[in-house]
Image (cartoon, rainbow, N blue to C red; front, side, top):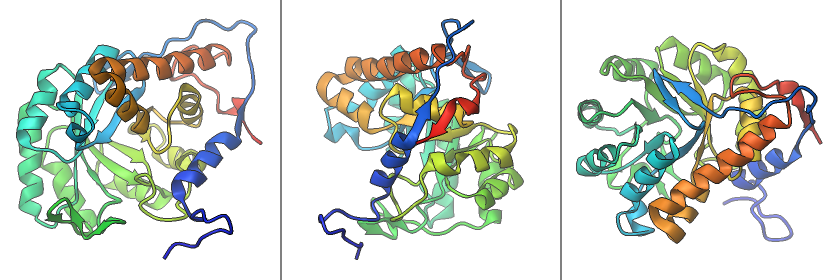
Length: 300
């Protein structure tokens, strides 16, 4: 059972701890000789309007009928990358048909053959990258041992290497939250990593931005480094990019936009976050997403 504070709040709530860390980071101004920043991002041979991406969401049809496809439409309209998690083959094909450049994240199913089948289908369908939730090997807090109806299980380095080799696409390891796992990701030939604790798969998880600079140093620009968990506005995205992230993923804000406005709502959320990101970049002398000095970030 989680430890409770005197106020009845979960003391180990990783989402709250992550938010507090975001808010502890301050930003200095650098306006002399500054220019209007470009938020364009180059990734795997593609150019995107923004480094603000849709997180690897699932089951959005419960939020709004056709929610997954509407989310993909919104991402495409915003010039953003669309990520997706659990879903049928038909759903993945429908997402790609919207024109959204899509990354498919697969759970670490106990059934290896199921993983290989999903990798094969995703590649044939036209995704731009595939990957796996490395932090979901024991399931979630409320469904331990399972992802929906399928059992999940821990994966060895050799297991992951076999998945990387099973596709020609970049293979992303999602849920990297240590320097040790970052080194292992490079060792197996991963095409990118997501620094994440899956929204709090473990209480007291280190905030992704706190460990991000260490992981970035290990990766040494060899592969893209993405970040998710708690990113709701452009300033959050700016702080992540300043600390070395290639791009960020947004979940809850996207769901809110979908709920209120469908595809247009998703597009508006992504563009609003990108607009605030551009404003922060412009006011800190950051001309583009690859030229943000980490020294503009201060701890409170």
